[in-house]
Length: 213
Image (tube, rainbow, N blue to C red; front, top):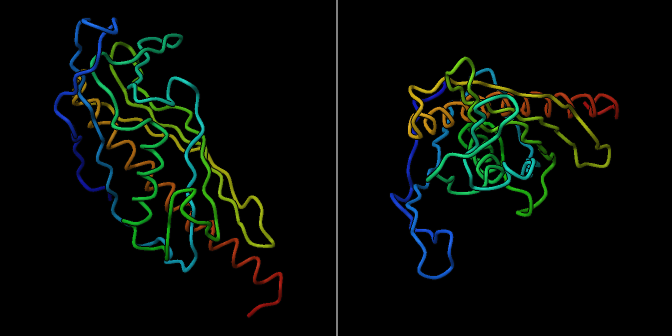
């Protein structure tokens, strides 16, 4: 169901200042942007409502461009010499918007601040990191999602936690970034399908309650 994915370094090398402000050493930093296109499931409903996607809330380390790695359960570090193109929440928000657009099943979708739709999708980014289990890396993405209806009879429509794990082809940063792209595409497809179904269910129940035909 998911299209083939590759990571994409969007800038080969970016020179950043080192430890000292003047005359200090330079560190080469590679900038990465995972590619996360999805393919629509034919069972997803086509909807005529609009959706606004908020930026995920998360903890301080993930709210940055650093690429997180957990070598042991109680240690959270970052990969040296590598950065995301945006902060992790911004990457996730943009990827979700693009996933809804790629689905072709929704009238309009935008990021929060670009207008207000009929529904809002709000998320907490619980995990966005490489986790080592028995010495082997696994990319883990976990998102808590809430779908909210903005109309007069609005409120919380549904909430669900989504989680996916992908084993990279190797421990190096390039296969790890590729695995992040695969994991994000998989979890985004799950969130898109769930949101479309739950939004349609909420509108149907609202119409029945109001006596609309």
